[in-house]
Amino acid sequence: MIPAIGSSVFDTTVSQTRAPSVTDGMASVDRARGADFNEFSNILSRVMVDAANTVKAGEATSIQGLNGKASTQAVVDAVMSAERTLQTAVAVRDKAVAAYMELSRMAI
Amino acid sequence: MADPLVSALKIASSGMEAQSTRLRIVSENVANAETTGKTPGADPYVRKTVTFAATLDEVTGANLVRVGDIGTDKSAFESAYDPGNPAADANGYVKRPNVNMLTEMMDMREANRSYEANIQVVKQAREIINMTIDLLRS
Image (tube, rainbow over all chains, first blue to last red; front, side, top):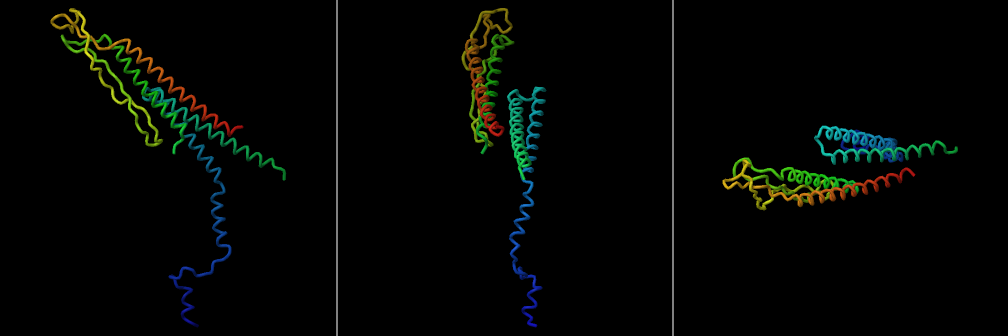
């Protein structure tokens, strides 16, 4: 046995201990896809959380306005912003649901 | 980069707030148009003035408006003969505030018109935003 070859397998300083296989690159791509699989629903849920937060902020400002701590403009501003965000969120959701329905009705 | 339409809403809102403050000052001037001093020869209420200043909003990069400072009118007081007034001087003259009702009314009108203009901006911006969102619904 030639010592130089036998030792290199267990040598930790050698980073590549086996030849790269054909599936190596594909495996990493697949893993990335798995993470992105629910990306759109993630976006949708983020949009919804955002909308809910804006509505909450609008409510808080309204209450402050009723207590005389916030100006009328600030209250109207906050509520309008909440309305805007909610409208956008609902419109995006409707569009997504419509796309889903279209897929489900597709002839097989 | 913030949405320009949302920025427009914010700017108009700042304008409305500034005009509200202006109206508040006008209201103070009108309400105190007859306010004289308490002690003989004392100065009466001094008319307040309001100036506006542009201020940069760091988030949107837009120029908002705010009330710069609330100053006082330097013009001279009128004096009226009213010996019975506690603020009357030795000759029976009382210093009266330098508030001119006509000026205040004009100022009020102007504040009102400015406020309306800002509301129109808000309406237009909102309409455009809604129209754009409605594109998704068709």
